[in-house]
Image (tube, rainbow, N blue to C red):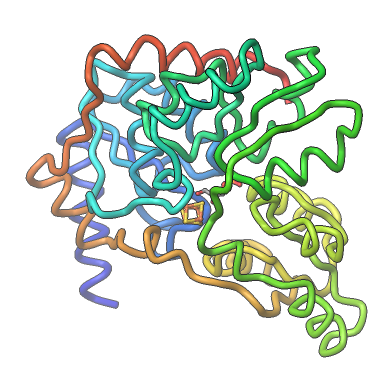
Length: 304
Ligand code: 13P
Ligand code: SF4
């Protein structure tokens, strides 16, 4: 703990010195989330806050696509990620060439792209979505057919809510959420009778069907903090329950959960090093900024 306290104090001083903010995703470890983060939230909240900040330096305690999104919205600012290898299986599942090919095969069908993608993929898209606004984004288009990429399960889960729209998708998956099964939920219900089950929509549809509620990490937080279940299992990344448990000591959080190895690459020590050396700077090629920004800003304009 003294080592952690030293890193926290150093990070706070460096933030003042550099006029920096730390944006932390809900899957960051509690020692980051509850200490040095200035803004915490789901992917949608982090994108909104990145668009608003007047800091000179933005440190993203999250994964690479989140830092790219912050850069797309703030091309003149320094955007840092404490570990360049913090990637995402969804972002790795599709390329810009794949999107161009999909457009050739489905002419005229709008492309809704999950924010968990590279800037190059966003630049080929009509607009972005997150798990917090996916349904609203698809509905906002007012069309009968949509390409929703690259998360197959998110697309299938939205499809179940919007049967009147044909949603075409891609075979990308989150390596954390694809590992959950319906049997995990049934076992949790047997072990903890009466437990409330919340599942992230990156989970397969069979898992979401067994849950009491499905929503983004912010929606899960809202559910816990407004409905106050006595016992809850969050079918998502482990840090989500760890962070909520700190703020909600009266709620019992039970397993299962899975770890995201990419999110877990970020540590207090790496955040400190990032602010000390202004590393690792995340850049987006100039020609991609405008089209990627259009897709992100169109998303931010949709009321979820
Ligand atoms: P949300 O926080 O938007 O629900 O996203 C989950 C996720 O997996 C981010 O990588
Ligand atoms: Fe990507 Fe899944 Fe990790 Fe989120 S939890 S960063 S979607 S691999």
